[in-house]
Length: 150
Image (cartoon, rainbow, N blue to C red; front, side):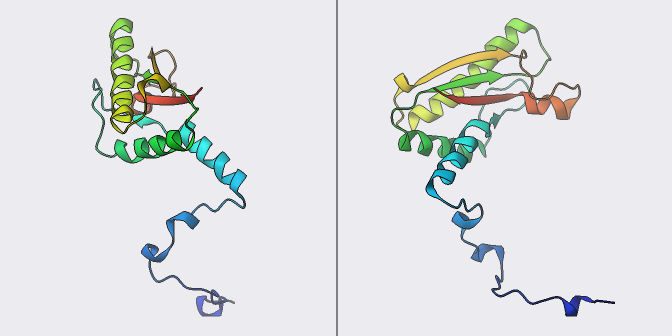
């Protein structure tokens, strides 16, 4: 039988994760692949919110800063920010809350120097859930802002 000491030794060793170059964590094989990956991340990395809130969470700035950088690298791109809610609350209230969420995200992006003419907002309220189930965990996925490059 084989044991752990029989395993081949790696050709390069990394003592800690801190020594790994973050740019190589996902290493597309060429520039076009990197652009496609950045576009996918831009589109599918949503900003999430607490229940009944349009306040940006502390960690949201990390994802939003990536979006700002993408917009700077793509100066002709325009952006639609859509606000979404979970199913709790009346439809009119959720539409207004979704709009406030989109506005909070837009305001952050504009504060980083992106021209307001490049950004539109919309709201779906609870009409387009990301997770179509009930319960706190499912609902937490539905309280979000999404990004659609135009």
